[in-house]
Image 1 (cartoon, each protein chain N blue to C red):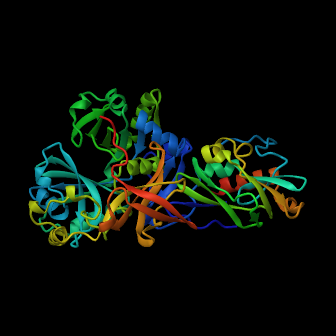
Image 2 (spheres, rainbow over the protein chains, first blue to last red):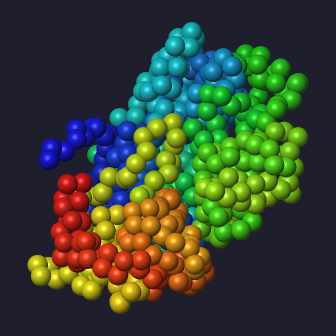
Image 3 (tube, chains in turn red, purple):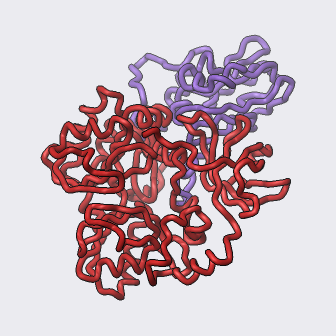
Length: 369
Length: 163
């Protein structure tokens, strides 16, 4: 029997390592990525109690340079990049003219003439094309994904583990700030950012150093409970921390106000794509709002399940899953704004059942300082 | 068992099984069979142990490994009927919802209550304490058409090799 034509998947520099570790692999946005190594629950708990090591090299990086760099970044994003200090980063949205999301991203200010954007793996080429198409400012832009590998080290012990290989005091890098330094002699952009709700770092470096850095960090960390973590745990961790995932909570039909991301949306900064729509929507109010919920019995809500309130269909689950640390089943969904109050009883269609749930405040999980 | 892996990113669209890493999880020496020889197996990775007119049904070690950490099991109550080849319950892991197919027809006499509080038993002991249901078979010899342990072992080795 002939086997079907296999799609050519993109691979990070650590693909061989993941396969040697017997990770379960999945096609994620055209990338051959590890879902789990030892198990999603174990990896999730390790990140909350010790540390998790994540290969996130599939993420995209876009460099914006030149005297017009800030102008371009301001034009295509909703947050106010003029407020960034050198060495500071912020979470933002890449916007359409309708005030909806092309992507979410981190914007890092390297200098007045150099901004470094980290975007989602699945969107990197569309994002670059979108930025290019709106580059009336004439900044220099580069789709730099191929020049970077990226590792995330997240968890209460992450700093201590990374510190063993890094010269300067990592604790001097404040949350959502970054510095250039050497990790095990390798030049890195070291950012105190992450997608887990834990303290930790994301390091960006040239791909040829990937296997060495991975091995060093894992060797150092595994004695203190660090585990390699795949996309499965990455998803359960960010869900517990109530962080959005593009394609689920946000996409090109959702605005920052609807998604509870008003804190990254700054019309006062001046012109940007979608600004007028967003100002009007703020004045008129939004029809729907993103909420968090907890299941009341043992059934698990999954993505796209129908949410009903008072017996009427009211929206859909955007992300639903067991929460391994909280030991609950949780999720996020869009509901009519009038129904968004915490405590509201809702029901979720799961197979033949109407499973009871309740709207709860977000974040579901917040780390203790 | 049909695993629907939930997409981490629905923008990606494609559904279906995750690609295997290409290696069996544990090396099997020639002549050594991991799977109990008195069980029968389906292509959907269920097992059944028949004794007289009664049977115990579960999912195989291969299935639990594919699924990952089991978090929830939904099984029919005692008195329900199951029909060969049809879905009779679900096993959920963190990332996947898996339908379980009946290897034979019969009436459920018991479902494994221990799985309610400890679903992870399905991962740690899928052929023993992780059993799903016990039944009275409608047709006492219906399991004879299913794969024996050696045939199942060959079946999954072929799956791994072609993944």
